[in-house]
Structure formats: structure tokens, C-alpha cells
Length: 155
Image (tube, rainbow, N blue to C red; front, side):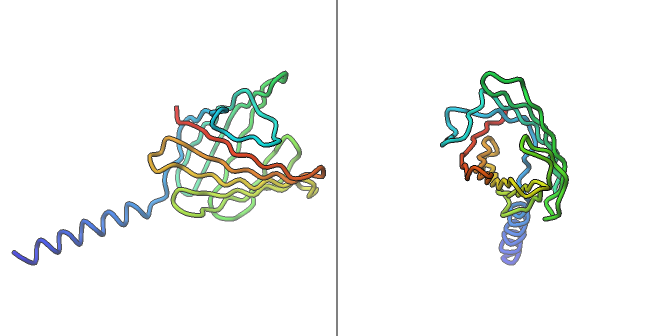
């Protein structure tokens, strides 16, 4: 009987370590909190809504962004966390994006236009409670580098 207690404790510890090893699911509808975000010199949108469908290792997202004095712009993307390039369109051109997993709560995407004129590196971090997505972005363009941080809240 004394052996059963340590064995069950070991099984429970193994179970929790396996659960912790699973990547966090980013699925859901996310709304940009413009006040919590830090814009630097980046153009601040009025609104962004993103819908993510995440089934590891696949990620599909679509969204709508609205900037002041502009029409809504929609965007979509589908790819895998495998470091392989996937086609994507951005407002500054067509190109390829790669997704890699940094850890169970953090992913990184790298986008480059086909002509090499623009690149975007985004690090996306899901909070431990699954309610907040923080995106740290860096865009390199012919006119320089722009950095900003977006904070999204789950709807």
C-alpha cells in the first residue's frame, strides 16, 4: 500500500507534465484593445477583429481592420507551424510567410514580399489564462523600420 501513493503521485505528475507540453490553443474571436496597445510611429487603427481557428499544427485566421478615413480591409491566412513558407498578401505586397513555435504560448511569423522590399516579423504571445494575445511587430520597408505592440482580448 505504501508503494501505491508514490506511484499514483508519479502518474499524476507525468499527466500534468504531458498536459503542460501541449501548445496553447489560440482559437477564438479577438478584438484589438487600441488603448492597451503601444503604437510608436505606426498607423493606429480604429478597430481590428481577428478570428483564429487553431488545430495544431494548423492555423487559419481572418480579420477586418479599419483605419481612420479608410474603408475596411479584410485579410486571411492559412498555414502550419512548420517553418515552411506559405503565400500571403499584405497591403504592401504579395509574399511568403513562415510560422514557427517559440514555446507553448509563443509563435513567430516572418513575412517577406516577393520583391524583398518589405518584411514583417511578428511575435504572438498567448497569456496563460488564454484571454489575451500580445503581438510584437517589426516592419522593415524602404522608408525605415517601424515597431509596435498590439494587445487583443478574447471575445
